[in-house]
Amino acid sequence: MVQRCSGLYETAAAYVTQQPAFLNAALLLTTDAPPRDLLHSLKEAKSGNRRSGLVERAAGRQLEGGQRWGPRPLDLDIILYGAASFQDERLQ
Image (cartoon, rainbow, N blue to C red):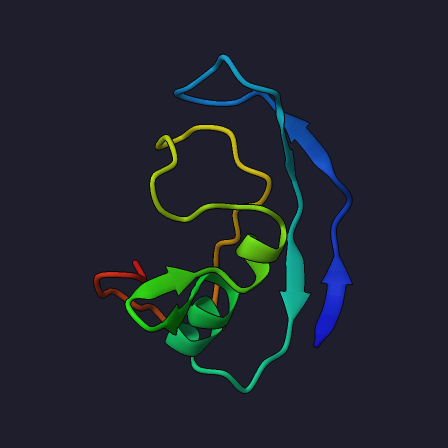
């Protein structure tokens, strides 16, 4: 459940600079989902041998085959998860 939402902030693209500026925002939310499950629900779901983003795909993002640091309609990240620290192949 979303508790708070920031305003939108426009920043210049980094690394691949020949693209439109990025719009950035942050959410504070509560969830019972463990960190990996939360990331999974934001980023991907397995369908056979293909992976397709749930929220990101709905916004038109292709998770595979795109240019690293290149244009994308949406990029979701988990910045903090309580006071916990996680590190594995997907979460650092």
